[in-house]
Length: 105
Image (cartoon, rainbow, N blue to C red; front, side):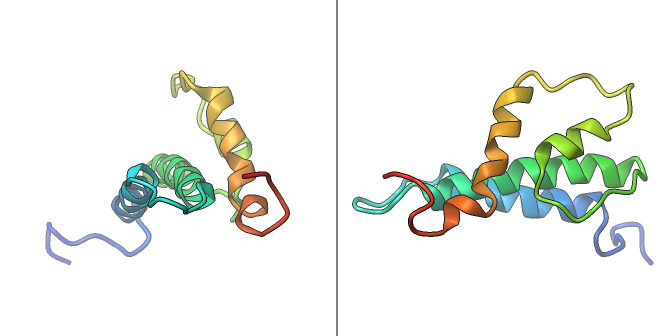
């Protein structure tokens, strides 16, 4: 593998996917559209960013949507996230908020 190459599923891959989700999360929401898709991508960006850190540090993690779980398994030498509570609140947008009737407009 050349120096520019990296293994699939490595930290760089997680970050590329997180950056793509962040682009969608911060894109203008078209008139008449619901905000749930933007919220979903914000959750995905946060979750994949944390998974990038865990992957980089070789910390194994379960395949979950829970940001709280991912934050809890970060090594203790990682400084706490400044928006810890806000990040955890994003978890609800992973699945529930993607379906009709689960939230208000």
